[in-house]
Amino acid sequence: MREDRVSAALAAAQMYYMQDMTMEAIAAELAVSRSSVSRLLALARERGIVDIRISSPLSGGTELEMRIRERFRVTAQVVPIPESVSEVDRLERVAMTAARLLATYVDSNMLIGVAWGSTIGAVSRHLTPKELHNVTIVQLNGAGNMQTTGIEYASEILQRFGQAYGARVQQFPVPAFFDDPVTREAMWRERSTRRVLEMQARMDLAVFGVGSPTADVPSRVYAGGYLDRGDFRSLAEDGAVGDVATVFFRGDGTWRDIRLNARTTGPALDRMRRVPRRLCIAAGEHKAPALHGAIVSGLVTDVVVDETLARGLLADA
Image (tube, rainbow, N blue to C red; front, side):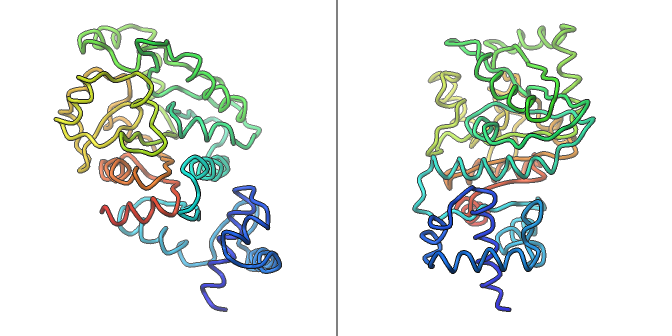
């Protein structure tokens, strides 16, 4: 059987089962008839692509997934989305796929770190409930700024994770950035803060997006009043291209001497790298530089991206 036929069946299955698209919508995007979509879905079932989750019959996954794995040594799930789709819809479809994939990663007795942000907020709205026990969700970074405590926004995301997995939720009620590094050092010595930091150090899984100052759907840390003009100037001077949980890094993955990191409440990247599984979700081609920086810094073990961003990531490498 021709490989392009199998690839089309895989794409149709992902759209139908993981993105909740109708056969009519799939037919329009693949430029085929509705009956052709029906036959592709039947082929997907016959070939074992569709089970409880979608798996590719091609050796090691799709071509893009294999290229990302070979180039970066990370496991990739590439979501097939045409370039004509709006950035908002693109994010929702990537988030839906990531949420359903996440259900295969989580298990009982796990400690899961969750970062807040536009992407993870979208993921939280699509989580598949799973009956588990002894699961804890811990917030990765503070969310307060000069305009708001951030508690309501971050809490809503965390509570969705907690409800989906029957988990306890541990918030981190500190600002996203301290005004002075000395304040952070003092706060980090407090027993109540150390308890959360110790939980973060024991995480089995971390779930996060990647922030980018150039994304079409603005990353919340850049558009939500967390950074002032001096902060933006400092980040530009230090060559930062993005962040994970409000910890900034350059395109080559370096991060330690970026000045703003001395005031952030997100986990240091060397601590994040010790988490066994680190799932990054990103959508939109403008996130390619930030995602590349996150990957080369060693932050990512698994990634869910749209097709356009996957191509941009490989072109940026």
